[in-house]
Every structure is written in structure tokens, then in C-alpha cells.
Image 1 (tube, rainbow, N blue to C red):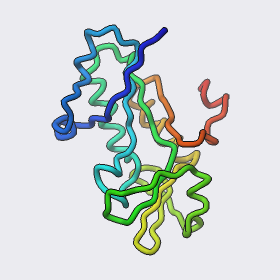
Image 2 (cartoon, rainbow, N blue to C red):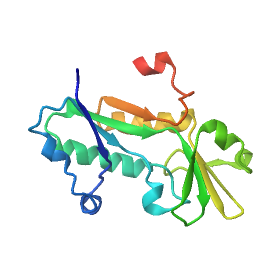
Image 3 (cartoon, helix red, strand yellow):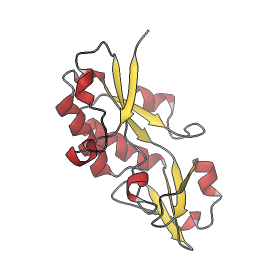
Length: 168
């Protein structure tokens, strides 16, 4: 058996101030893996913001490396889902890729360079979704940070990851 602890994405001292949770507290405990849930940034910034910007993801990876002494225990969870919500609000509806395809305006989506996610706005509603390019960009950020383990969080399964890419 392996013990895996999931916890919040903390990217800097400001984010740390929101949580009593401190990743460094796990250094002396018999935990095999520490999984950072590096997604849901839109709940902090409101609809119209990506699920996880690449800068926030990079800063979260660096925070973990600064706090955890054994980097082989770090697992970064990246998103592969989308959402829609009234722009500026903090109420969003999470969507699978299949659900996102059914939303009005899906075919007008453009790539958000800050996150690699696809996005569009229509009638005061912001929508985001992930595709294979989104995942590639997020995985690249984690790899560039020299973190070896990645978890992909996706509601309803993940069509973008094949057995071959899992072994890469």
C-alpha cells in the first residue's frame, strides 16, 4: 500500500495565507506521494479566468519544490476539463469536453495563451475547455520544473491520453 495525500495548489505566500495547510509539514511524515490539485483557479479569479494558467502552474510547481525535501514524492494534478459561468461571477458549472461541445459558441473558441485552454464568451457567459494541446502545454510546464509525476483530473474520463502518452 502507498499513502497519497491530495492538497491545495499554493503558488506563493499570498495563496499560502489562505490555507492553514502547509506542504512542508509532510516532510517528516510517512507519506509516499503528495498530490497538488493544480486546477480550479477560476474559483479564485471568477468566470473568465482559465481553469489553470501556465504561470500559476509553474509557480505552484516551484512552491512545492521549495517546500518538499524529497521531490520524488511530488505529483502535480493538472486539469483536463472545462467550465462555463456568467463572466465575473464565482458560480461556474464544470463540463466534460463532450458537454462543452454542446454549448453555444463552442465552434468560435480560441486558444488562451496564458493557459493553453480553449475559450470563448457569448451572451455574458465565459466558457473554457481543454484539448490535447492544452494538456501538452500543461505537462510541458510540469516537466520543465523537473517534476516527474503528473495526475490528470478530468470529469467523465480523458480522451486525450493514450497508453503511449502515459508511458512517455
